[in-house]
Image (cartoon, rainbow, N blue to C red; front, side):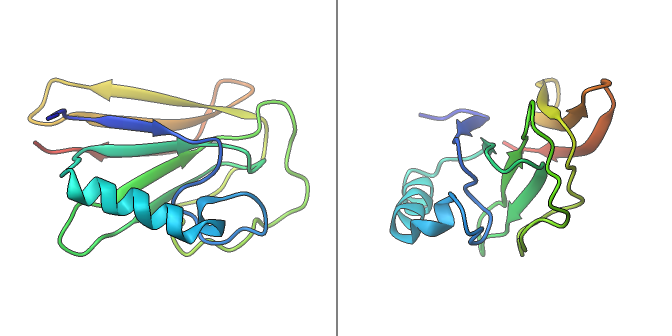
Length: 137
């Protein structure tokens, strides 16, 4: 079905590399099946949202001949990450944030394709990480 934007929610990160914990990277066949499904169905405008890391980050997977996939990870709502530097993630697209936070997606439908403004908001209401992603038609 043709749509401009698909938001896929996963309790664990889809794009990140192996984390030592729960992530799609620990299930490489299932992750590849999802990527194959997106390609086979010509699914455009896909944005993943995830959590369960106790820090926040954005990840980007560039795919040859296709658009980039993004994963917005927001966590944790009530428990700060106190262990310092997070695990490596070669797909990380920008800084990480380790305080209590929530994720916020604002979608602008007015242009030729939807633009998503993704934010990680701290407990004082301040945006700690932000990214604008345009999904063209």
